[in-house]
Image 1 (cartoon, rainbow over the protein chains, first blue to last red):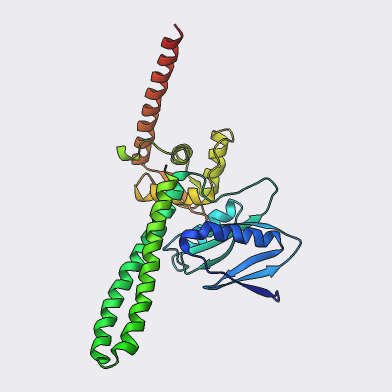
Image 2 (spheres, rainbow over the protein chains, first blue to last red):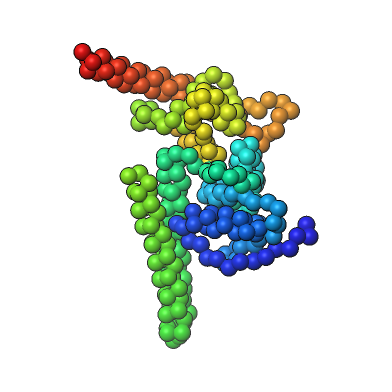
Length: 184
Length: 109
């Protein structure tokens, strides 16, 4: 490899993924090409000689084991998209060489984009449910162990969970309004 | 099956491309562009999502990949249900065309 990776801080919310796409395209126009995704940091490779257009896709249930991921990547490759990386097994990054006047899109109709938005929304709803179950399990556990340290343990834990719920709930509603806007 | 109608342009072209013969994803994209004389271009994400939907609804199925070919490149074939949906959609479109043409003729007189 030997290429040097440069890190840039950016926290992108799932419902704003199109903005991340735009950001990656802008970075690429300045010679910084996205390579790896992280929770807070994205890694870039510097190269002034090329420019890419990035496409960010959301697909769940793609595993290496059953060959679904390879099959998926092969289809996008055939269509001219180079696979870059995946994040959290849900987000998949593709790119193609930038062409003046061309705005390549992974999704070319409202119906398929609606399907993807609904999938993103469903994943958020599921995470919300899973978190609720974990919260209940944790709370009954913590309550029995830390009866005396109620303030030191219970309050911080509750605050963290509240934030997670608020974020997922907000995302769920936000995706819902995006779906509505798209179909109007 | 009727709940699939009307078909989106992408669904329609995918189904009629496979009506002709089994194909892989990229073949479907090329066929669509050719059949629509360059008007309809299906993006990779749209195609992938549509293929999954059509598989789930039983309108298409996996087709064995020819020997020696890249196994990552899955092949698809239309099912009898898929053919029935295409026939129903063509009937629906014909009715629209007929009604539209009749209106144009009546309006002229």
